[in-house]
Length: 373
Image (cartoon, rainbow, N blue to C red; front, side, top):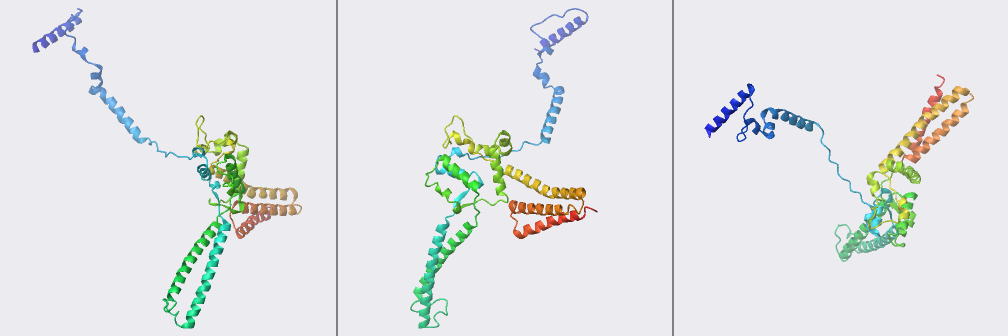
């Protein structure tokens, strides 16, 4: 075998020499040239060619480490109204779909009735205890000088005290619950109308069982009070009246639109009638809050800039003496407007509104007095 390889190499050398001298090399198909046996894979994995590839791969890995990784976003699950069966499940989903719809009865009459009942029971027990202790003192004036009463009526006295304790604890529990429920804020008329309209349009529960929404004076909402809730309701009413594509895009998030989404061609547990779909519109509270805060900011800037500009123009156009009454009227009007905005848009108390209005008026008066200088 070794001898054959040497003959092949000798023949190749002779062929190369013949080629240099201008003779054609002899073809030997049985023994192809060695350089023709090298495949592409062998060339690609050669040490010379692997160096650039290793440099590029290291560069790519370095870039991947430098670039920020894609953050994981937690998916948001939105409860859709029409996914809940018709009836109490669907109404419960609706009442939980917005903070303004958490409206329930506080049953003020029943609270008063229970409190009166327990109050009368305590009154009778109080009289019974007083009569018993008076009789015990008549027998022995020192019988009540110890914590543990002894003697003939000791057992009756202990039973009566236990009964008084149970009745009083029940009375105090009801009284405390009534006081807490009384502290709940009342829902706005728009919120009550929204809930009543939903119950009427869906006919989800029996008409008599849905009549609780008609007791306006007995309704409370468990949501936290907002400083300018009435302004939010006005803005939402305006948006519903002028509802269009841009408003839907600006004031309704993707999760908010899912609440009333209807799957076409699919039977849903509580699909609403087609003619009332347009009334079930939710707006994102955070976006409504941005708009209302913008309105408040513009109002405050207007109350600060506009009266100063008017006072300046009045003094320079008509003179101080001629425009004196006009300036006083301007001060009164804008101070009144400032007080109204404080009382409507905030939870400020009366003395706080008075102090803020006095400070606002003082700023305008100082500016008015320094116009000439």
